[in-house]
Amino acid sequence: MKHNLIIADDHKMFLDGLLSILSTESSYNILYTAKHGGHVQKYISINTEEKIDLVITDVTMPEVDGITLNKWIKDTDRNIKTLVVSMHNSPKIIDNLIENNVDGYLQKNAQKEEFLKAIETILSGEKYFSKEIKDIYLQNKFEKNKEKEIKLTKREVEVISLIAEEFTTQEIADQLFLSKHTIESYRKNLITKLNVRNLAGLTKYAIKKGYVS
Amino acid sequence: MKHNLIIADDHKMFLDGLLSILSTESSYNILYTAKHGGHVQKYISINTEEKIDLVITDVTMPEVDGITLNKWIKDTDRNIKTLVVSMHNSPKIIDNLIENNVDGYLQKNAQKEEFLKAIETILSGEKYFSKEIKDIYLQNKFEKNKEKEIKLTKREVEVISLIAEEFTTQEIADQLFLSKHTIESYRKNLITKLNVRNLAGLTKYAIKKGYVS
DNA sequence: GTATTCATCCCCGAAAACAGGTATTTAAAA
DNA sequence: TTTTAAATACCTGTTTTCGGGGATGAATAC
Image 1 (cartoon, chains in turn green, blue, brown, orange):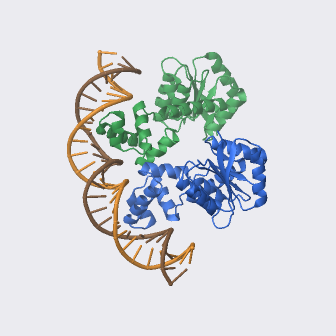
Image 2 (image 1 turned 180 degrees about the horizontal axis):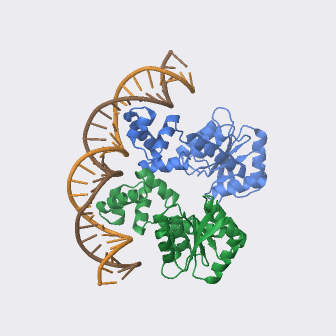
Image 3 (image 1 turned 30 degrees about the vertical axis):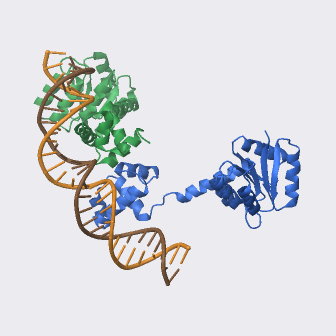
């Protein structure tokens, strides 16, 4: 059974190249080609006859770009697969696409074989991302996680250190010349912030971080 | 100024040897030699004229041995130095002597030079122990410390582990099917036993021991 | 066979911790 | 310049910990 494809790209050269690659494969039927995402949206909207299997789209396009298009498609009809093709590979774009359930991502400099493999893989129901893209995505994720890492303020570090050194709230207050209420606030915030239950949890955190030994 | 010495040893051969070593040194004046500690005690007791600087004594002697003599001297007159000379080097004896403030300890197989050095060192106010003796003493101390190492019972380990895992007394009681009073007792005992102040201290101990991570 | 250790349970009162807010000032960042 | 983050302080409850006791049976050690 033939698969129906749509291609969106404002660069004629690339579009032609892609068409020529696909023309060698008898199982792909190019339903429609567009110069920007808006045309694809319109086409999908009015089309009720044919089942659309896959939309291959560039990222940078006038009016409606590939990122917007991908999201729109996934919001509109989950059954339509999307393969994004781009010259650039900004982590932000990749992240956005993956968040919005894109089915594949390829760099424009990919070889014919990779294009065909990607399309085939996606049509079979799996996702396809080149190794570089996977690496970029993961690297980005790690960095984001790092950012999400709980950061304690100076005072908080000071307080948690003293807590782990077995001082009571009152004692810590005296040492730091602060109100005991203040230290209570810090303790409470630390417990919330570090997602622990009590002194034991705070102490473990302090040790892990090397604030005490 | 000459130093006044007393020597106590029931082995005539050793006594003679020691005397001959000391005779080459003009600064030592042998006040008295004895076959056992009792004689020395008596001599020191009745002597009020001369200042006694050092008592060199064997360990194994009839009636009053060197250990007893050393303690007696140190209890009687702190200004009299003591140098114990022995064939054996039992950790117990060394420990006892050092606890009772002996000023030096030598093995009988020591060389002439070491004898002289030991006496000189002691008379200058410092202590003198040969390397072997120091090692024996320290080794013994380490072992004793090891014995003193706090040992937790199975149950205590179980409880401290759960405490460090941030469970409350009630929760631990439920988990172990024990009364909360029991867990309270364990917590209290642990705090006393481990010489800490609170949960933070218990947690640190548990981590150090690897009961939790 | 008696002393010690272990495991268990109980009581009490004071102190501290925990949970849930709110509020002000200052400094930095967007 | 408005927003955000940090440091500070306070209030009201409830729960938990802490420190001081004592007690009992069972097992272990001396």
